[in-house]
Length: 205
Image (cartoon, rainbow, N blue to C red; front, side, top):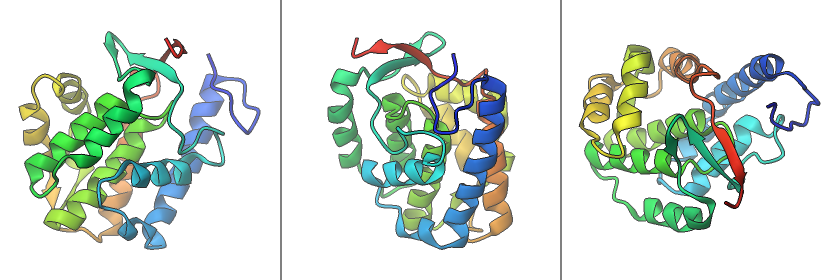
């Protein structure tokens, strides 16, 4: 199934390549314009702005809460009927420490508020919060793909693994362009399109 898109692309492979190229360029623009530094308060509204900025040229749903239930593998993300409440709860979570910030990140991942592009947007959102609150960011090039995916899959039950994994990759190079670019590249490496693609379970079920 190919997601409906503004570009009229009809094959998954072409859509994946185009999505990667365009959203990577927009992610870099976020950094270079300084717009990213205006984020970091940990709200869904900020995450939605990041998502819209990355994907507006591709999808009409950019920055909008999904209206379908989705899953990856055997894990179903927050049902549509509970999604807005879940996002309000996430926004109220504290973010003073590294542990609190990662707990907030995990809950946002469980919510998975968008139809596509959740991981890429949320990782930028996470780094914006880390940068603001503890003056560090994740050097994503130091995070192993398989370890990350497994840790995130287990994080709703046990978040120790993802905390250790990301804590070991922290850097104080918060304004380093190279670190940021590596993070953008790693983001696509983690998702892998086929390995990390949401499954549409039907509207409002």
